[in-house]
Amino acid sequence: MLRAMPGYHDAQVILFVADTEAAARFYAHFGFRETFRTDETPPIKVEMALGGFGLGLALPGPAAQSHGITPVTAGHRACITLWTDDVEAAYRAAIAAGARDHAAPHPFLDGRLRVAFVEDPDGHPVQLVQRVAETG
Image 1 (tube, rainbow, N blue to C red):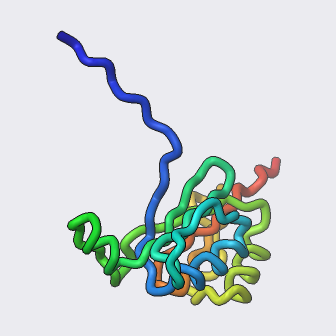
Image 2 (image 1 turned 180 degrees about the horizontal axis):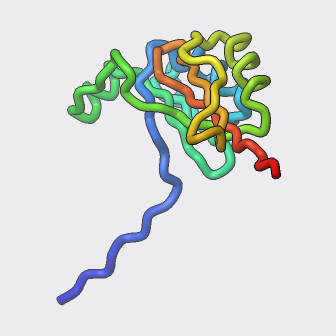
């Protein structure tokens, strides 16, 4: 007997962060809007969205206790990629919002893209990418 495949929707990536409110303020600079937060102060989790992309910002201790998982809280554990029409301006705005520089805007893929990397306040890489118009 074949079982029907369950439906899925509203996918979300969860980043483990030291301060959910500070992380939410940082990602709001990129246009993410808050869609949910737990009642605790500080909140255990804040959910945000940009377009159809869901981003959860969660404290690692409560996640470990509630769900029996082992959050990784150091190193480049995930990378958020944001496409933009002006990577230089996006890079400057990210630095002004508190990001740490990782790699200034530079050509990538034979110059078809311009890419920059910054790190959010918890050290997660944020890749800023712009398509370069073809000339010719």
